[in-house]
Image (cartoon, rainbow, N blue to C red; front, side):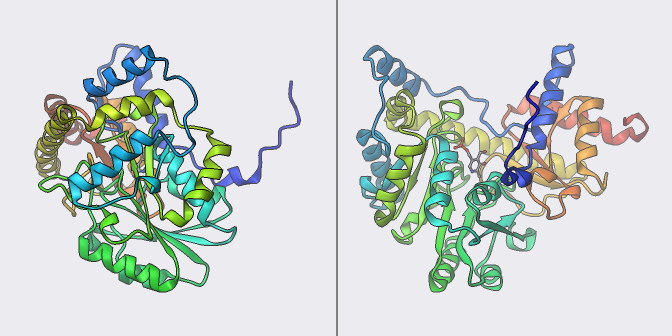
Length: 394
Ligand SMILES: Cc1ncc(COP(=O)(O)O)c(C=O)c1O
């Protein structure tokens, strides 16, 4: 047996995704015959759109299975630049587009090229938990600022200005956000950008849910200038989670350093996925994706009042992504226990607040509407039942 185990200390702060434990338990229950309503999963239930799958199959037939340039397939970079022009009227130089293995790859690259050991990155709490870890992996210090419904669970320029210290290198925002689905207004985003620049720092904007904004097509932070980093992904709006493909638009001055690093740590993002993703920008695919966006909006419009109607508090109406971040303190002061009881008793899987930070996680849970309305209704019925019969709780 190997007895000399020495795991590096940088791993000490890397927390697990607690939802994975719940997911594993949900799968176990399912395999023993229980029916489970999944409202925990942060990935669309829709399959990858056919035009993308067909482009992928064609790429295989043509033998496109070799390494590509580290920053990505030129044709795909051009398509992404054209997407910004068509959708937002923003001109992007294809040379500033870097294709990555999921947006997770982009986050790893951006933190590595920007952050010196000891430098800090400001971000909102609750927020996407991996961001803290990406900063820590390069020796940086994530500074998670508690945010609440007063600011739509987003950072504001005022909060940023209060938290800036000489060691602050970057500020990171996500719009729409995971877990709250809230969107930063153009005005607030501009004010944050101005505050970060005045400090001499860099703004990083995670737009991976940008395609899933309801009621408007939203905007991109790239409209503000070309001296900020924008992260995006083929995972969510484009329905390609398992293909592992994302991108970043970086200031041109950083591209050569990012290229060098991408060559070393990734060599290339998946060739097959990149050729497939070219199919994502066809008119046919855009039409399908827009139908899906409308379907997600209908789900939100069903689930939000259904949950508040049975006593959850959802203070900020989410304008995007596929999440509702709810206060469950009317029912429990331990959201992890609440999530686990809900799963065991009535077979509804949700995500406990502790996956998203340290800002009152015990009173929050996240519902994902990545399942169809009949299943969401079934989930709400089961939760209603659970809440009515406190004695039946585990
Ligand atoms: C806010 C946010 N950023 C980044 C990611 C990473 O996604 P991917 O690597 O699939 O692009 C996720 C995944 O859920 C997310 O919610």
